[in-house]
Image 1 (tube, rainbow, N blue to C red):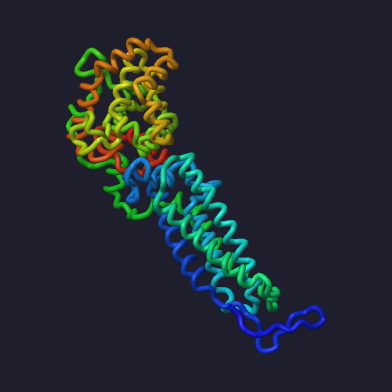
Image 2: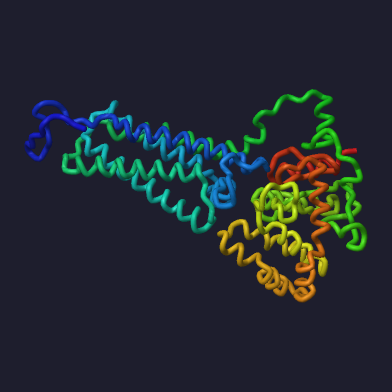
Length: 430
């Protein structure tokens, strides 16, 4: 990595042949570019998880899920997506790898700084891996790739440093300033992008509206143009009519009726529920009626699903409705508790959402446990759950959640702001 022979005079190093100089580090440069690219992809996935209900391309199952890692509470740090922070970090790696081609510095001077950055990256990657495996209980393939690249770079830099650690550190005039400039040029822009892109992502792909389009959009905001048949969006307001009551929040006489078909093991459904509840509070429950419908992604109760998939979802759906049959507010409390299982590891979830676990939750909520257990054992609520499933299938549901606003499929922004705007405009439409 260097050439020449050092001679020491008066405590200073000089060269007998040519200046000792570090060379461009091709391995770290390649790893830095690869890490930057994967981090960029992670940023794109983060934006998709926050703005769209569609499953991410790297979601395989509950244990291998980018949505749970990137789209969850640990997907950001002080408001910055981890993908943007990764791009910034690898920008620094790239700067240190190619900088020796432009400055006069000894190999040890560069190697020491590369080691500091590589060590920091390795420590952060190990911490994030710990969060993923032991806190979220899921693996994100893209995130794991970033961690692997970081660790490989650390090992390479450490080996390189050990080889040259005894070489005196020397640097030419302005080397540190050039290093700082390169780091700032490559590390700061990704941070800026990470700050502003989430707020701008909802405008990507938009086009200028004509007056007629703008008028139409105000009448039916963020929804498909063709409404479903009116009988599909009727609300059952009594447990003694049809196959059971539709649990709902808001004003039964409201102008705006929102249906959500959901799976209690679906991360996107949990997010959608939170966003819709925030929108309800913003617009007012006197103006909106929110109806919750079940669509478990498991063939234990859903014949339109090819496998067990979310194996606990059918029992969760029936248990929540059994709780609601005693007290309406108990349904919503039970549903919130069920959604908490998304962040549990599979073993804990199996134990928590077993018949014994359901009974313990019913007792905690002050319900008649014997009546609750009888309802669950006899599958009293199965007919209503399957009725919701068939309705969702008629509406073309292929994945959860499906959100219907005034009989039309919602297709707007997948965040609280998008739902708030859609609900408000629907309420104000003539």
